[in-house]
Amino acid sequence: DAGVTQSPTHLIKTRGQQVTLRCSPKSGHDTVSWYQQALGQGPQFIFQYYEEEERQRGNFPDRFSGHQFPNYSSELNVNALLLGDSALYLCASSLVPGQETQYFGPGTRLLVL
Amino acid sequence: AQKVTQAQTEISVVEKEDVTLDCVYETRDTTYYLFWYKQPPSGELVFLIRRNSFDEQNEISGRYSWNFQKSTSSFNFTITASQVVDSAVYFCALSEDPRRDDKIIFGKGTRLHILP
Image (cartoon, rainbow over all chains, first blue to last red; front, side, top):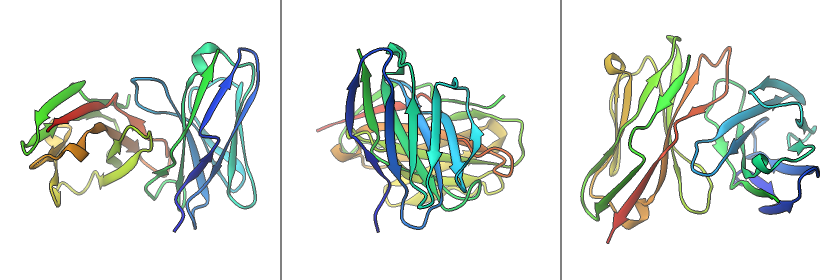
């Protein structure tokens, strides 16, 4: 049973660039949530996708956007990168929104120089 | 406002000792879920337990046990006979009424060092 997978594992970008991170949910899961984890902090909720729509959003600027595909995989896009966007980006999937435990992937480590 | 506080930033114990990680939460909801996740150096968050607000029974899973007390808004985690492989960062987390809000709110984590 495949767990949550994310790509790439590591990424280095420069300020002002744009980045796309990818996530494939656990088999059978249709809900994907994205979290940002700065160094030494707990993860912070960015947004959640269900049925290809953004269902819920945390306190992140519009530079953070996402997409969910018909196969339930998801992308996180960040435009106009800032140094402060350097973090571990975690994807989590669940069976349905709101009722199930979220299972996390290994994350993508983004460094913005 | 919802909040999770893990007052212990870092703990070191010698292998085979018992260790308790503290967690205090704040929420206005009567329906909520509490979680513990483990984050080894690889970075992946590993799910350990989920407890809903209506179930105050303590739970034991092998060397792990959890003590949920609504009266003190605490959800503490104890590792018995700790092992080096238990070394990781442990996060306590809260999810409020899932019909309205599905995001998980994490504490800042407790880094646990098990010394051989």
